[in-house]
Image (cartoon, rainbow, N blue to C red; front, top):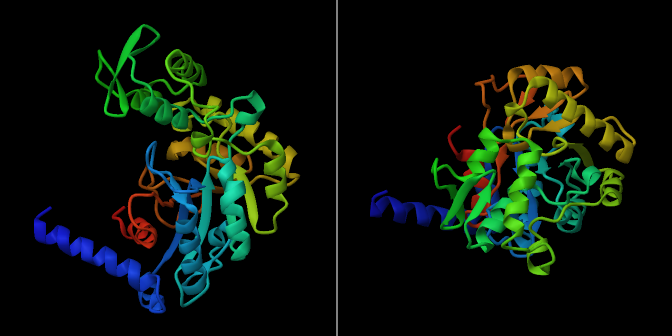
Length: 332
């Protein structure tokens, strides 16, 4: 990007932040048109990007929710799918993926303070006594470890904060997502890293990976503002599995969450946005009438598709309100 363009972009971002955060915020809000489903992950004390950019800071999240509630319409996911939009305003539905403990301790109180509806999408990892998502484990372990690791006879070496296969030159993250998504391989990855790094007892790191307990999920489900939905059972990339295996995983997830919440689980957010057209139909037949992709559709579905809708991810890659503006203005 030319120097002049970079300077203009910087000035624009600073102006956005200042105007939207002041009494002139309505000016910024008027520039927003349309209806959006936002995808958050975590809300931590500082929103550090040391391991990944999935967690907003507490002050930043509060600022975003305050802006949306003041100048836009924040509606439930159910109302969004039923197109019960507030006229004359941009409409937003709030979602959280992964079921982090910080959703319960940090996000939930802010949502309740602003009377803001949201949907939390939860995995079934508590059922198998695995309290960390594979992506978080790989992100954190890759940042903290320094030694080469070996998995199924394949050697991986660190470059920057990423481990790459010495033979294929593909990142470990890529291999898990696209080539070996099964839960068994993920366990072998953890075993390989555990020989060189341990971080799960470090209180400074826990905020970025710890998940809600069953009792906390149950308490959250009692909130009149927050619905619980499925985020798969093992957090596998469901689109890489056979339709039978993926559907079976969703059935396990639905049964587990319904036992905790005592209501019908109809909402599904695909882990990593991974699905197939066949799975969308199978999931609907299983009772998931509300289905969500990630930052984009995978199969060029129409925006008004009644079965699945895309979301706009919020990441800690800019100042607070610009995280919001960047998400909804990015080309899709």
